[in-house]
Amino acid sequence: MVEPSVFGSMQPGVATKRERENVKPPTEARSHFGTWLLAGIALAAVVMLFFGNSVGALAHRWIHEQDYSHGFLVPPFALYLLWYRREMAVAGAGGRWAGILLILTSAAMRLGAAYFAYPSADAAALLPCLAGVALVMGGWSVLRWCWPAIAFLVFMIPLPGGISERLAGPLQHVATVCGTYLLQSLGVPAASVGNVIHLSNPPPIMVVEACSGLRMLVCFMAITVGAAFVVDWGLLERLVIILSGIPIAVAANVVRITSTGFVQEHFGADAAERIFHDFAGWLMMPLACLLVAFELWLLNRAFPVEETGALTAVSVVGSSGTLGRAVVIPGSEKRSTVSR
Image (tube, rainbow, N blue to C red):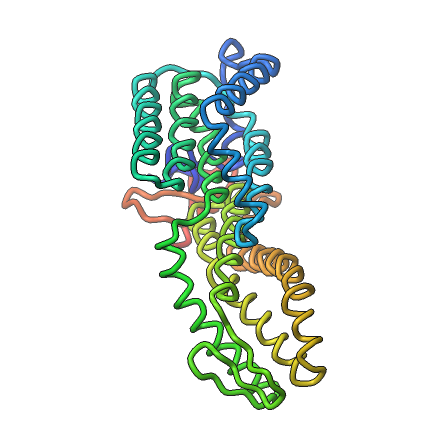
C-alpha cells in the first residue's frame, strides 16, 4: 500500500518545511529561546577560545584573496539556516559518545595539521567539532536541526592548493573555447591558441588561472546549496539545484570573457580592462542569482505540487521503493501515483 510522505523524510535529518510544521514535539522537550541563546553564546566563546587562530587565518585569506572573499557571507547564512529550521531545535537523547568521538577527531585533525603544516585541515577541524558539540548538548535531534548550517560552513574554507590547480586548468580551457565560439557567433574575429584568445584589435586576451572561473564555481555552488536547503521541495529537486551550480558558474565566466572580448574589439583594450576587472566581475553575482531564480521557476513549472480544493499532490514512496507523486483525494482510500 502506498503511503503519502515527502522526499525529505527518506533521509534522516533532511526535512522540508511541511515536515517541520507537522512535527509536534512534547512541550517539556522544547527548549526555551533564552536557553538556546545562552548555549549559542557559550559555544561561540568556546569556538573562539580553541579555534580563534584558525578563524583569524581564514579571515585574513578572505580579505587578501579575491577567490574567497565570499567567506564573510557564509557564517551569517549558516546562522540563518539555524533560524529557518528553529522548529526542529528539540533536545533529545542519544549520540553523546558519538559526539565525544567527533570532538576527539577534530582535535586529532588539528594536531595533524600543526605537525604537517596543513592549514586547510586545521580550519576543517571546526566542522566535526561543532557536530560533536551539538550531539553532546542535545543528541541526534539537535544534530538533525543544525547539520545543514554546519555543512554549509565548508564554503568558508579555501580549497587546498592541489585541488585548485587541478580544477583551474580544465576551467580555463572550457572558458577559452566557449568564449572564442561566442565571440565568433557575435561576428567578432577571434581565434584561440592554448588559453589565449586573439582578436583583430590587440592585445590578446589571456585566460590565466585567475580568470578560470574557480572563484565563481565555489561561490555559485554555495548559492545553489543554500537554495536547496531553504526550498520546500523533494530530495531529487534539491540535488538538481545543487548540481546546477557547476554549469551556472561556467556559463557566467564564459559570459564575462565574451563581454570583455566584445568590448575590446569595439571600444579598445582600456575599456575592456575596466569591464573585465570591475563591472563584469560585480555583474556575475546578480546574474547567477537570476539564473538560480529562473531554474527554481522552471523546476516548479515542470514538477508542480498542487494543493487545490479536493485534490492534494504529495510525494510518495511505493512498496517497491520507487519515487513518485500521489494525488490524494480526501475522504477516499484510492490513491494514484504518477511515476517520475
